[in-house]
Image (tube, rainbow, N blue to C red; front, side, top):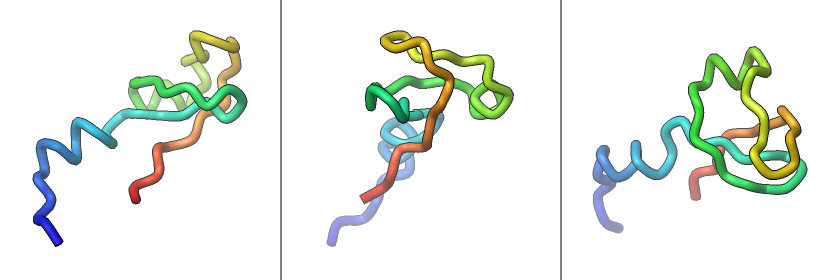
Length: 54
C-alpha cells in the first residue's frame, strides 16, 4: 500500500463537511459547524457530518 502524504490528506479531509440532507460538500471551520453558524448553500440546513476516510 502506498504511503499517505500529509499534505494530500489535509487537502482531502481537513475542514470538509457533508450536509446530512442533500449530501453536498462544504469547507468550513469546525467551531462554526459546532455552533450552527454555517448553513448548506443548496438546502439551507445546518446539519453537517465529517467526511469519512476510506
